[in-house]
Length: 309
Image (cartoon, rainbow, N blue to C red; front, side, top):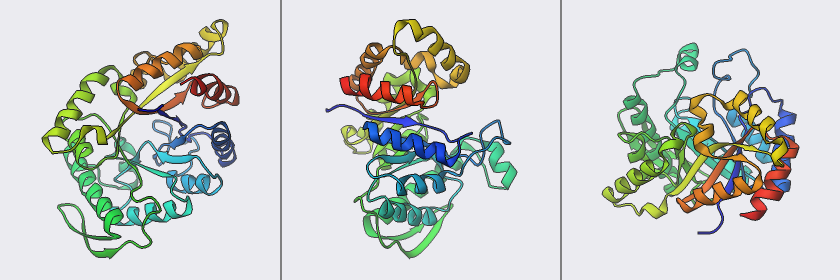
């Protein structure tokens, strides 16, 4: 297994489009593999804070870059009808010449659904909808046509032309639920992303996924393992306490898994931890940065971390 793909996760809350484009282009110039957005109708917990819409922003960023891949960690399946999403995906993949990565999840914030009158439902219901969407997308990419009748969606003899540039845009499914989510990963996902809140259970969740893959007849090695984690990267030991304080202030909530991720330190320490994650089988590592992707941190990540992997 070669070196892992390194991405930067940059939720767009509070950024202007110009700031997002500058950071995306900087990542591209530095050879960072991918940039990831969030998909929320407003910043979770801060509804009055500016936040650009996820798909429109991804389209603009991909239209104004040449090499970097862009995706969402992850799209909310509740927001877009799956047949419409299939058309959106294939169109954007054409625009981006095959640089779209398709992150998809069952939804995570009930409040934003309530505010706009979208159905929420139980986790089981949301997982059922996600499963139907994944089947619809699989048909769209393979056949350029959808013919599907399910509990939640019915799509009849629906053409999806042109198809994607990629034979199949990588479908990234995020989450670690063993009853609903991991079976969907085993059946449909090209990439499985472990969210920050599950960083303390990595080995257990990997073993569960591998067992489910074997149960459904899927080669576990055909699923790329992906993890998202907060990285607090300091240029030297003297600056490490301040960097750690910044990370704890922004990402100190338990759900961010700052300590469990183990990516706090100087470049040599971060390189060692990334090697550990790679040895566990993770081929994609998506990083929050403690300072929301400043030029200094991006330069340090590219020059002193990625270059040494």
